[in-house]
Length: 56
Image (cartoon, rainbow, N blue to C red; front, side, top):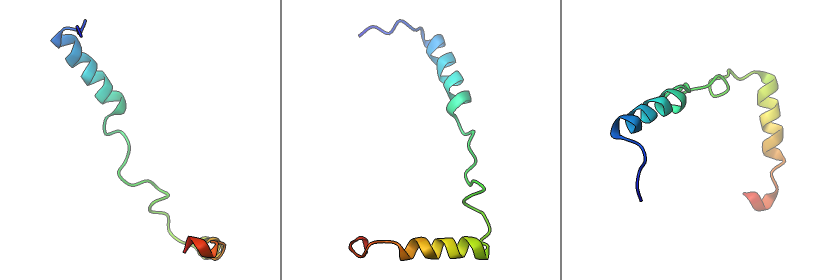
């Protein structure tokens, strides 16, 4: 299979892709670090109680 791109073009393409899809996302998002409130604790407890028995 012939690659129509030159090495310089491949490198430029790799750099463009790295700029777009590189390490742009934070490692931790706000919903990962959200502080729990009594409302969120109650909602999580309710959801855990709704799990069917066969789901353990």
